[in-house]
Length: 130
Image (cartoon, rainbow, N blue to C red; front, side):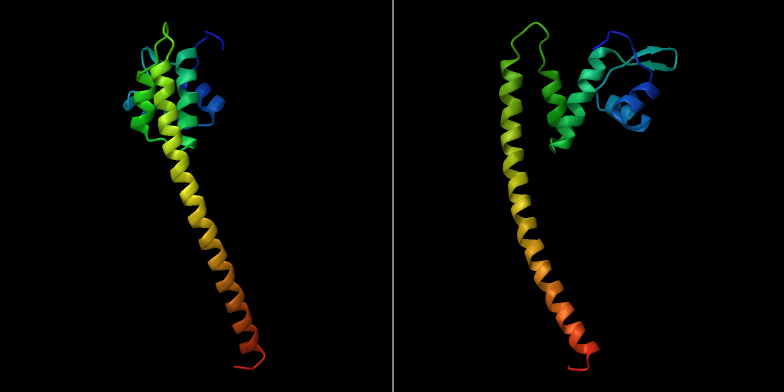
């Protein structure tokens, strides 16, 4: 990753996010771009953090979990504690996602049955058999 800074519009383009999202993450202390007057300048560190934020969001991590994980990063350390906490959160989230998937599988099957019965009833009504 380059050490060059990016403007907010360049960050938006590179990460497919809105300026509002970047400002929101800044307000939540997840990002801390440098300032040149009113212009925000995003470093390689900011880009790495945004990558992790977006990945965490995709997995359904809370913003508070993401903030805590980012705060645990130790540039000079092994980051064992950060990795262990990330894995704990990921395992919990996987259990939740699996349960949601199972619930959706049942709901989809039920809905397919309802639609099939509705189609059958509608066909009978149209044929004058009800």
